[in-house]
Picture 1 (cartoon, rainbow, N blue to C red):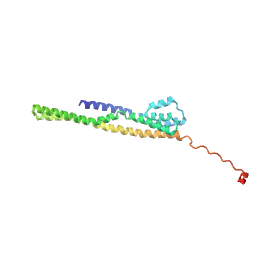
Picture 2 (cartoon, rainbow, N blue to C red):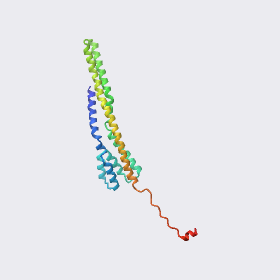
Picture 3 (cartoon, rainbow, N blue to C red):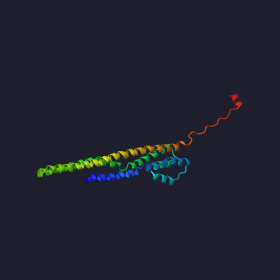
Picture 4 (spheres, one colour):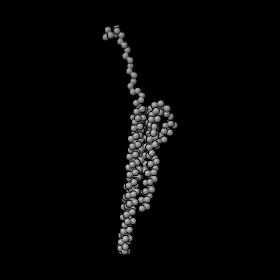
Length: 210
């Protein structure tokens, strides 16, 4: 039971920490992407402004990485967004592997405790004989408590692990969308075609010579 109780405490701590860290208002602050695109259009950005943006939220960090190389080619900006995005996603998925491990080993720890309890009970029966069948039934019930405790820890841990995974995946889709909009503003807002050369009118004498 001791390892199961430790796993339950660790799982509870991870769940509380992830619930606080993965708040939508923190990961995707409302109105931030539109505000950043307006800053990019006005070109009123300095290193201090970008640093503040990068430390404010995961979305801000992703957009700040694109703005830091906004004067370079589209391929370089996109590569910087992808590199920064991998680091951001890794931090959002922090401790989720531990939570998944607890969900996996919880039933195994419970089953292990039950087996150990049954072995001890049968060893006592072999040594002293079966004096009271009710005590034997009570010992089996106490041994099965380990399995029930393991399942009680593992089932919520597994459900919450899947929930946080899907939540992070949804955030990634939204962040990719906002990063693509900013990338388009940075690379497609400038005119891509050069002005055409004006044709000079041909004089009447030149037409005749032709």
